[in-house]
Image 1 (cartoon, rainbow, N blue to C red):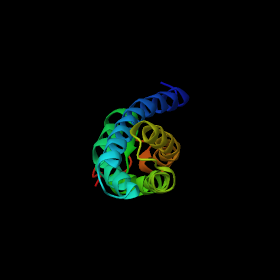
Image 2 (cartoon, rainbow, N blue to C red):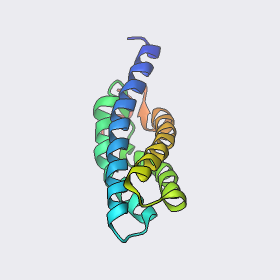
Image 3 (cartoon, rainbow, N blue to C red):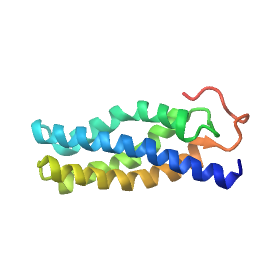
Image 4 (cartoon, rainbow, N blue to C red):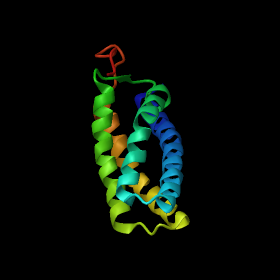
Length: 139
């Protein structure tokens, strides 16, 4: 497969994995925000943090399968998610309504912005082009 075709396939797989994770995140977060007495930004952050390990595994397995994770990839991935977490937490702090339907839309929009950032950073920093270089310990 050409490098361009592989990039397009990776982007498509990222949209599937990331879109599924974003929808799950938005639904879980909106449901918890509408029912729990916790601050929305804290709830959003806790849910986002809980999603990091399973979504990282899905990206390793499906999204970037033609690329090798760098040594320490999980840590780098967690750092890139810090930027995404800032985006979704800011949305929760600034715009939450505590109405599940409206907040689901809010968290989906915030997740979409975070996803664009995440794909770029993961493609450039976390997963390498050459599987033989630096693969191995992803922790």
